[in-house]
Length: 313
Image (cartoon, rainbow, N blue to C red):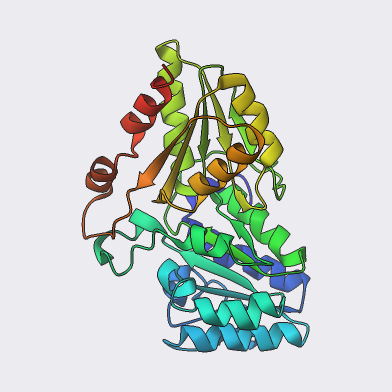
């Protein structure tokens, strides 16, 4: 896969990348909980490697337990489900069978936050980055486009240890290209500026890029840091930027409590006390609504990002 990768929905990049990884490594096994079509592994992966594809049915806790057993036997299992079912529904199973046991299980939560659309509040999980970030032994990733997703998946396959990846299912704007290399624990400097530091992750990075571009036309320059690795977190990168600008804004397709914004506040309070504005969902559940409506209701769309970056005063 190369060249026009960005023209492919991210879920199909997930499936195709797993096909490649499984061809390279016989230890790769894919598990689904009756959502393989939604995740992009049916039929993309299931028809190529049917002997290493397990659909547990609507039984996410069992899926995690089976994955832990496979990992204990030397396999590298990738488990996917909608974000609320891959994180909060099976949190205890992940805690004990995966993280506490330090099993080499890779967990993928799909359709995060407001991207789940018409499924509404029960399926809009705004806390997965937060709850997975506090899990010992767990690495937490949130790629922003197809190229970064592919790079993260390849890194996950060779990394030994539990990983949680938050994956957008739909088509995403192109941010990177075939040369992109994922570096765990490091942010990616997207733009240089002196007036504010803007930290984004996952789904929100293309919106952050748009906001920073429009601010530049006003004469407001922003240090834009894309954070694919929510844990481990790039302490040095954030502190260096905050020391230059003195004003930090975070934006994420998550609750403003505990996720990317929480990591930024924790880092700066310990290393360089700096004012921080956190943009995201304001301690509320989701609802059936358009993304535009939810951006405006919770205040983390492009215009809200621009206004927050101007607020340094």
